Image (cartoon, rainbow, N blue to C red; front, side, top):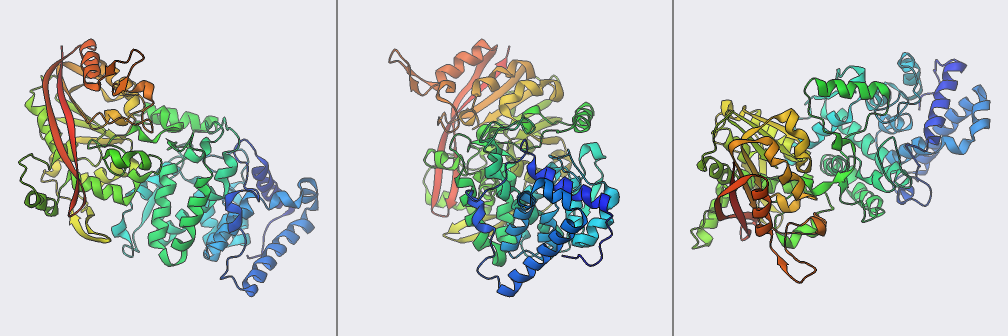
Length: 593
């Protein structure tokens, strides 16, 4: 740490240290990791750290601490040295354990110095950036500045855009974040992948250091009840783990997998199904900026700012879990696997089947059409001849876009949303014309690369507007997304915490004469849907068996729809070249009267 040439006067340094200590003691946002927390064992030098290195670190820390003590001893006398060593020093210690470069672990020490998206109560003025550069160096200060300025949803967008094929290539690729709305949303350029990975590493270390402590108390600032801090950006942090394990495999994979697992193992089962995807606006300026974005037409649903059930989404194919089988749904529901590369590969194969999937026909005498399930659902909607009032369609739970793109061949405009950020980001990449590849499992660890082929003209695909959304909040979207002549809800209903809420919204968004296609296997699990919200599949208090199909017919009839189609649809999910999951879904079509 540079301490030989520091240009801080006493008043500025007092502000710096006071800011750090206030941050450390702010209990509404943080309850920092104690020695009893799972993360604490990663705060000591690792087994590869030489005595010389440990001594050098101690000298660096002592020098800085001594400088502060001599310059403004009243600060430490008032707060105590122990407070200074809490979260910020903890993040630095974790990064050192990870053998991070010096500029990264130095950034860990002052990462919140200018105030962040979630913490804006105390901040060093940006006019003092030169002083901080003098303390920790230019590269470290740059990371701190980005950490403080950035809108974290734009960071997560780059995270979800990453895939396994990016490993060890595109080193010169530039990444762009955007500043927080209240700061003007200016572009923040990261000139190469290395800087982006440094930022991802800093971000994950920061969260792992604090999450267990933060979960010990509720937070009105973050809309958390006790225990719900684990939900904050859950899927993004899981993806960051995946990125670092692949991109910095030799240094990090053997460390951070176990650390991440140990930290999240401390979470109660009561909250493991929750995810909070965006940071609530913590200041009046942030709240006004959010209102301005919404007024300008940006779709930022309120529920994104609160912990929500992970399973709300629905890929238009099966569910939000890694696979669609009843056998695996329950165990996968809390592990965020639908944001993983394995899940992405699976859904890409389902939506855009490669030549390898066609080998299934060689393994069976069945003539059931098993492939192109998402496209077949879209084609079913068109075949039911919805009255074209505004020629718009909606795909609820669109996954990676296969059904939405097919709908665009029939309708002038398609709105398509999914709860999975990973799926939506991938659909947008396909739409932009980027060559998107995925891995087709063959046997064990062996897989083959396949390229997404939509066989749909780019001008047609541009008719789709993809966005991240919550199917249970469909009623709230009516004013912003409008009404539709056609709607598909495909293999989603039994993965919602409140399927009735989705159905109840249909009269508001479907035009007269419009058609809704609902496809579902009715496979209910309490991990996804509380039992009192199941449409059927249970025995009531009188001993009567309640069937989902009967309840669906009753509901849709009550809502003003007439059943015009009723058959079964089959699909397969590939596990490897000799194992496929067969799903038989119930498919009904409903015309609004």
